[in-house]
Length: 111
Image (tube, rainbow, N blue to C red; front, side, top):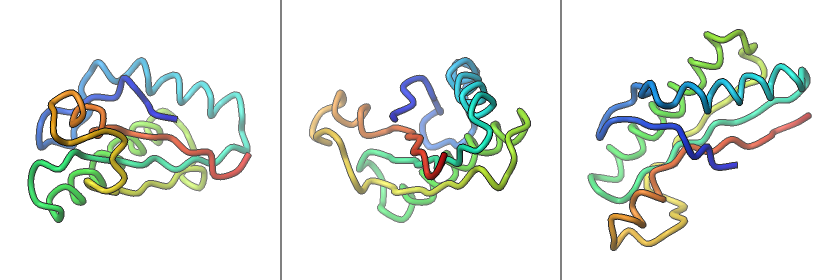
């Protein structure tokens, strides 16, 4: 599932305040499904070096996990991984495509 309303400033890993409502929905989902385990995946567009994008995407995924931990989700239910600019879902030739590629995804690992 792509978390459509999770936002970060350019080249930053801190969650923007506009992300809180989407992440609170994830907290609610986790609370309603106490055995569910999820992986948070971060992706970037292809602007910048692959190494920088991998580090950025990993840091962003970790920021989401840290928010969920702060809200009481147990650590053993969460994992994260950054994928950098790999696995694009749109072209990186346009700003619209790059915006789609900059995303955070939630995958159910087990339930």
